[in-house]
Amino acid sequence: MLDELKKAKVIEVVSRVGLIVLNTIAIVSAIVYGLSSQTTKTNDISFSLSILITYLVAIVLVGAFGVGVAAYRRDGMPSERHHLMATRYAIICSIMIAIGLVGLLFWWPYMRTGDIVFATIMVTIGLISQPMAYAYAYVLKKLSKLGPWEDDGQALTPPMGFLSYTGFDTDENCEKYPHDCVNEQLYKDMADRLVADGFYALGYRYVNIDDRWSELKRDPQTRRLLPNKKRFPGGIKALADYMHAKGLKLGIYGDIGNATCSNTYPGQNNHEPGGHDYFDVERVCKRLTPQLSHKMLMVCEWPFFQYVFDPHIDPNYDAIAKTCHCFRNYKDVMDSWASVDEIIKYYGDYNDLFIKHNDELTIGNSGLSWHQSRTQMAMWCMWSSPLLMSTDLRALKPEMKTILQNKALIAVNQDKHGIMAKKVYADGDTQVWVKPVEPVMNGQWSYVITYLNRHPMGHPTYMAHKVSDMIPTAKPGTKYEIHDLFIDEGKEVLGSITTSDTLELLVHPSGSVRVVKLLVQ
Image (cartoon, rainbow, N blue to C red; front, side, top):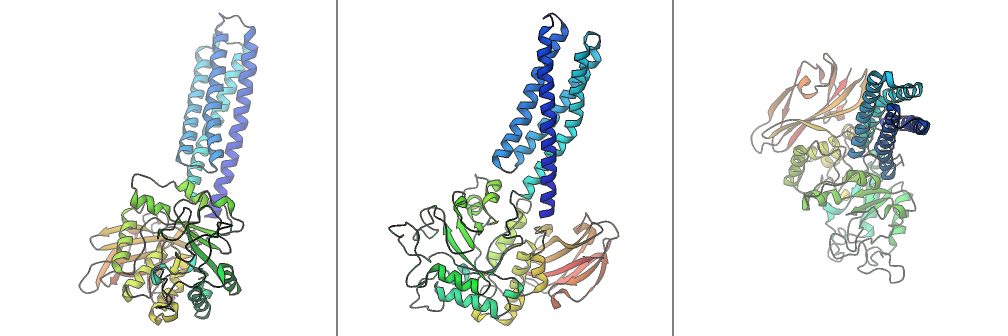
């Protein structure tokens, strides 16, 4: 993605500078030509043509191109409207070519040498500008899809770690639930387990605090938030130091407004969150970003509020991407298969609208069966979602730990391209999802294919689909090795297959999956 972004930006700069140079030449030529024509008699047809062409060039080139570039540079990154501006400019270049050619063809007997030279310059500039303008329009559209972010070292692949929200429900009652309430010892324990139980070695790095960590009142002098004295006696900075000493990073929740989502605890209110590395913020956080004094991974949730609570508002993803490394689009995931199934359905129904999903993993709690836990892990990896475990790692069952530490699925999640899987087939309770991943050979991708069976009863059933139907862009005859990512973490080769073959897999019901990687040969 970064290589593609850099290439697009190079093309954008070259085409923009080239068009600016051509426009400058055209405008200077028009001014010189217009001034030189002032000495001509007013009834001379060349005089009328010169004035007409002068104003045409000035208005068209300065107006169409100049305004478009100015709008783009002001906004910082292109959006669809900038692409449309550049496209219109390219069309205007075509009109300019036509006017110049018509002038040369029909007014040739009346034109002086200067007229002919100027018309030739205009046609030549138009012929050069037109393809360059179309390239400029194309690359603006490309950049608007790739995103406005720079490589600041944050979230180049989906972040992984622990988040307390679903697993511990922001419980404040430490007297009744001393081991399960939101306090500093809970997060220290989770940090210890990440390191000791092998999660750290697999890329799980973040320990994230959710809501209700602060006092109910701000510091009266600084107006900053204060950590709860009983539950976080050492303070947030000391907790962050504890994480950093283990090679981990500390995250925290906040709201840019006056109160958090609980409506009980104070929000960030435009103050910088301090001492940690990951900030999960409700609502709009654009005002906060310029105040940050150190690198921080920003996770924003306001697209979810707009999509779910105010469907008349379309989230501005250009603005979101300038502020946020990750963003959430749908409801909180609950500890139930109904919740996970609803999220899968939502992203299937609106698959073309989103490029990422962001919420927790509830694997290890009470709400998902073993099969359904595998399904949540598989789908979150297919979507390039952050892998944020929300369960008690101190009491994690071995079979759930195996799912969360599946190296093959983690590799799918951490694929450097981060392409969200597409739902390519759905019929009643069965779905097929496809995700392109590394390695790529001779221009042909490898793919991860997930068969999902949501039927709520019955025995395991076979699902079968032709490879060319699932991957229509694959070159005919391309050969793949088949690896089941839940069998020995994908090490075993189940067989080989080509685009003309059918992939048939036996899938259990009630929210179960089979996940295979087609490794291109």
